[in-house]
Length: 364
Image (cartoon, rainbow, N blue to C red; front, top):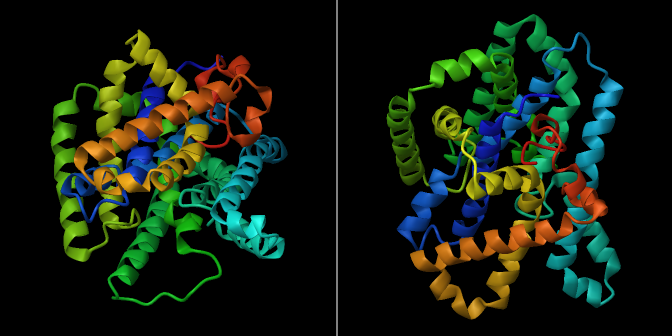
């Protein structure tokens, strides 16, 4: 059995909460300075999930002499493709329910087809298509890291840094990128180095954790500095709605090191809070998939409270409601074995080794 990396559980659960906060605050960043700052502070969330995904995959496979492509693809894709299709159907039904009720099934099916290809079924589903691509090339990356670590890091960094810089320059109208059939955000080169860095950290986990131990204060200073740089960038370039830019890359990796130094202090903590963190780490993929639906439903159902949601107490209450209700729904769903089809972990599987609970993504 793999050693339990409880520091990763803390980080996964924290990242899951961070994604919820991004989505809750995204509609209020213009109206509320506190929402703006919190939204920017959580910009590490999606890249952090990708780092953790690369880490958890390679950590399990680090001592293998060879990797079975067929076995890997069967295991990984079976746990991500079904939830992707099912949730895309759910979100498009919710968004276009008027057309479905009116019997305009052709219109809905056309939208569904486009959303499945583009990852545009809802605001967060693009992430799953990114992971599909990264899983597809993982066996090649695994072999590359095993044999040529230096070139592995150098090439993947250049690919992602260049890709993100081009997207950033496009947003600033410095360059003009051609229009594609699919959104640029789903293309794996933009996220490759996060995944590769996670794999590298897994290979050198003991050395890296030893180097970070006892450096929380220094890393905290770097965290504040990198966040300040991100805030300045977002403010002066008006790119606050994007997580694809060089300042986010810097902020994400500093955040990873800082959070890991804190999580290592928490890995021997026990009690109710630790159990909640462990549970959220295990079920974070389903919480990730579900929470935007609850958020939008609450906002639309109680639209008369829109002015209240824009206030700091309002969006904090909204965050709390969405988080608690999402977790309760996932908890109930986990009692049923078919929950695996929508990205959850049945209770009967929840006690497995956490390094093998990586299922579809490290969100889960």
